[in-house]
Length: 121
Image 1 (cartoon, rainbow, N blue to C red):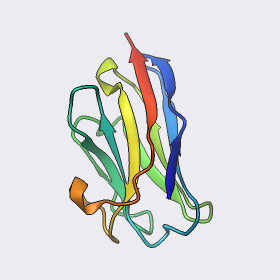
Image 2 (cartoon, rainbow, N blue to C red; image 1 turned 90 degrees about the vertical axis):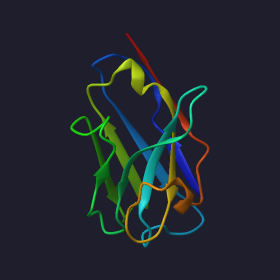
Image 3 (tube, one colour; image 1 turned 135 degrees about the vertical axis):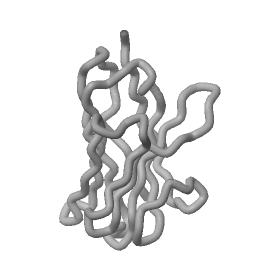
Image 4 (cartoon, one colour; image 1 turned 180 degrees about the vertical axis):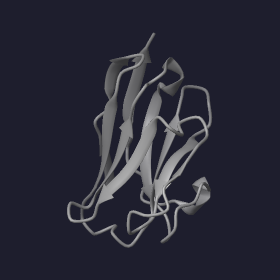
């Protein structure tokens, strides 16, 4: 199971770091992705990273502002979010996929419960 943490309320231009921690078993052999869902909208891809920490991939809307990384010794994946905008407001979820990152939501499993990020203008 994966569990997200680190969400909160921040002003526009601010930063947050989200964590996605695995429990019960290791996810070190899987790619991990971050998705987000705003009220009334579909869950959308944000970023993903390969099992070894390589092949990071980002949605165009966050490229240059967000950085995904992982520490397999801690069984944790991070999402550093800088220069936050009000349109980044959403519940953020992490999930595991195959070895290589993918933007396809249907390829992911073991979804966490989500952590809320609210960016005020």
